[in-house]
Image (cartoon, rainbow, N blue to C red; front, top):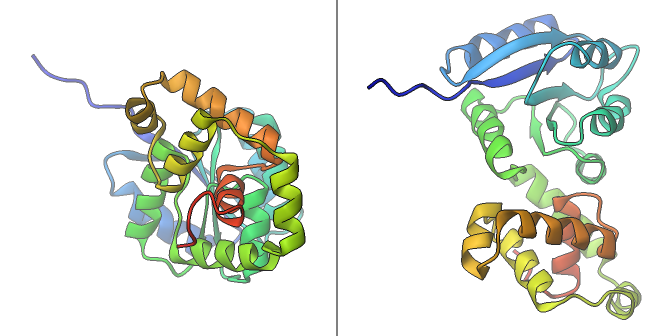
Length: 225
């Protein structure tokens, strides 16, 4: 009996540079599990496409005319909270990386990244929500060091008290375990793990998984990488 292949990952590329967009499209289209379903040349165009075309992942440029990627990102996350957004940019400013990760980006890659890296990021974000590159790790760690003051630590410890399960889930998230892996390790259902993760965001004020990891390191729940 023939086994049906899984549905390919539907991707939209949003970038105002036609040649770059074409190059990424050609390279990714060679992957059997990737389907480039649309292209946009600015944020406004992208939002219009999203209303009509089902999509799993967006490759989003920061600097575009009419509406930038920075302006489009919060609108995307508001309309489609589960949409995976991978930033592709020539800007490698650490403050920009942490800002966009805090806003909900699932990864941030340099535009000169090899297509295999982009492909790996797409697959990882779909399966495990976030793809952490050397660029994102360096930026997040630098941000942590800036925030890691005695006053901030004291305030964080005073305001937030985590349960044993919440602490366990947070530690395992920092080890890049998937929801299913966490559920198996601490003997909970995946749905319960997701609920704990959402509760952690509310309790800590984090807006994303990246924010939770920053919180965990800042408060010595896990060691700095």
